[in-house]
Length: 96
Image (cartoon, rainbow, N blue to C red):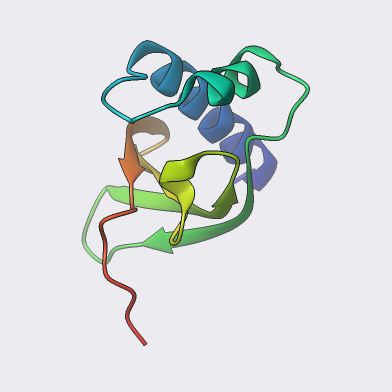
């Protein structure tokens, strides 16, 4: 597994999904500028999660430039090697 390849895929997938579904993900007008400007880092602090006996796994970015990234970040779920969804984690509960 090439980690950098999956990080790139994730960021590209987040960018495209949030641009296409701005209303669904509550992207504010000033946040759309981040999506259009490809130089700006959209998300940071990736964490990989793999589920036992599943062909799905997730990269959660603990920090991001969007209001929906607060407080738990944003995730990209993969099915095998392809991103399948952007996961808005703002309504999830923090497990301590």
